[in-house]
Image (cartoon, rainbow, N blue to C red):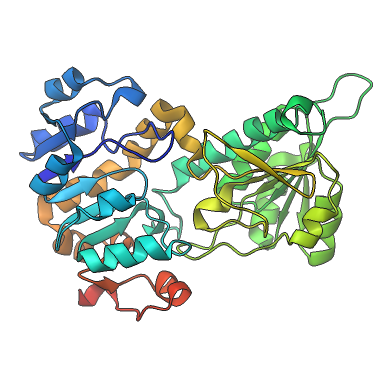
Length: 369
């Protein structure tokens, strides 16, 4: 199979779809890989590293899209990239379609076969291709929040860990999944006052057993959510409904009741965000203020730590890329129902139910494509 890796063009996105090591794996199994020039510079991999791995270097993204059967990316294709997709071409990347009707429309019209990292499942019901980026984003959320709390950046002027004789900052994490767990770990490590909210009894028990007295674990009700959020210095939104738009758990009214200078970090922004006041931002301009509350809503947080993120991502995406390349997408998906769950759009049809329901498309089962 001819596999293409274009350079990411989203604002301040430095990750790359395949590392040189991943390219070498694909080449060793008789596949051809074409990488856009300088695609890997953000992770410290120059064109020579890709050539040494067996890749051909292309001068422009147009060459990648025109001459390959499968495109491997990190972030959702931007409008100029979507215009280059063609009927039957495989797109393997993060998509996050539910809050993005324009992207969905373009992918449907392209006729491409679009496999989304974030909806591929595993035998435990987890999201293994989303997990490493959730781990990164969860940990980064505390770094970003701690920075935004600095007075010069509009925050309260609170040090999360406090100092002897001064109380630590109060961190509230909404959602106890992968993002929430990793956010809480980082906040606990900084000696902040940490509370985690969730509604799943099994998750609550797991969190309680892990953190013991170092973090409070609270069942999330409307009353509990309001009490914790209004008293928080930093709130991390870490909720996820696979493939669907995130629920707006924190209303604008509740934001208005928070402390002036408090910070919210919405890690769910890729799926539309879980704060009613959230709108996607970039690493170039990561924050804005609503009702005196600083909002950090960067939609590609892991892109800031591109090397760590790319290698962590390739660890989980490469096996499926090999399966698709070796067997073709239809056989690869038929052989692996978990990979089949990643199919969101194919030949003009929406094949992921949550996306179809959220955006008003007719759902077509992936097995029928």
